[in-house]
Image (cartoon, protein in one colour):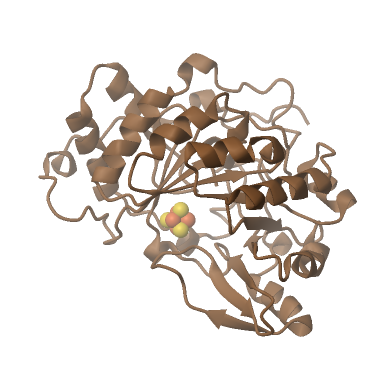
Length: 364
Ligand code: SF4
């Protein structure tokens, strides 16, 4: 199938002007809360829309083919622009910054950005497919990165290659995880997106592999992110079933969240084998405590993973807007936020073509 006309090419993703009304004018005092009284705590920064994998639930090859229009370099935010925006977010309450993509380790000199962001009083993490991690782990750690999350959708080579659709072997990703752990980017969180009928037979083999490793394995329900992954409800393996499958072999006990709004539900092996997590956006929505905001690689702000449009911060900066203008704009966007897509998801909202922004563009 050639590029589908329903898929919104990134370059023409809807860009809303920044709010100018009361939300913009309101004084920047006290805690910044959205319309559902949620604070802004987690900033996810996508530093590239490109990736060397074609994971079937994120960047299906049929859409992200050789003709796909990725963003030209000049449209990307520079590291200086990213750091400026990040500084303002920290002043407004952000405590955690996650670097994402596409595949962030494809962005040249990414260590330089990490070095600058590491000067901010935040927890600094990065999500990667692990393909370049073995080579880069030391430099990332030295630059000031705190932790990494690595995507791994199977431990069986054939299944993993089918999921990443570029014939990439498991071994290289496991080497990346080992390298990250060796330099102290630990505990490594290992994320597996579970698609029923594609890789759900990997749930137990992955659990067996990572028990007693010190790494935290998490299983993510297959989501209707973007508009191109052909999502269907019957391909979702509910987290409750994941927990039941593992618990049948290795008994599990629920443990408390590390902090309010933590995405993963935590479980520990009762025999001391470590911890796993499940992320259940489809069957157990967690929008009521969602403190996340996303910055795309070209400077668009998105208030939800399932957003259909963003707010253009790059224009404000490139037109000479100062930090006060940025602060007001960001505060206004957050104050006006009422997103709760996972709570209102229906068969109708999940239909392909509902113009949701691609996850590979705004980061997971
Ligand atoms: S669906 Fe949107 S609002 Fe809900 S948890 Fe996800 S990102 Fe947050």
